[in-house]
Length: 128
Image 1 (cartoon, one colour):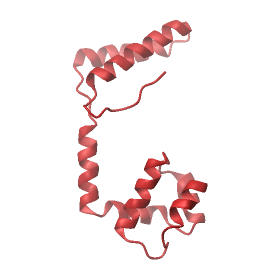
Image 2 (cartoon, rainbow, N blue to C red):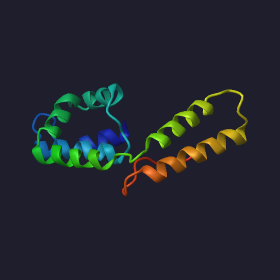
Image 3 (cartoon, helix red, strand yellow):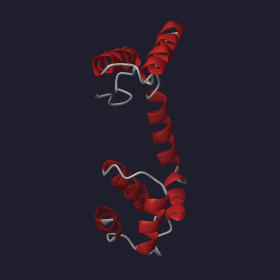
């Protein structure tokens, strides 16, 4: 709540622009604060409507284009064989009979598949 309050205190809940809304959304993203009921409740406590802020943030064409470009760059270049192997590895990972060492090895193989197929900017941080 502290980070949310600090971000929102810089803005007027009754009078903010789409640029302000984008700045708010970006500040939350940088702080690893995800949209959801908890965020909406904290924003409401501070006098903000989360849907209104989110709507104002995405109403800008520039913001939409940036989000689209970002989402397009976050794709996997995965072959059918890699996908099948990934599915098998994930299936085996959740079998209770695997030893800790086998689980660790399975995660290593999964990470290698993602590292081979992720875009240049990366897709996700896969650490075990």
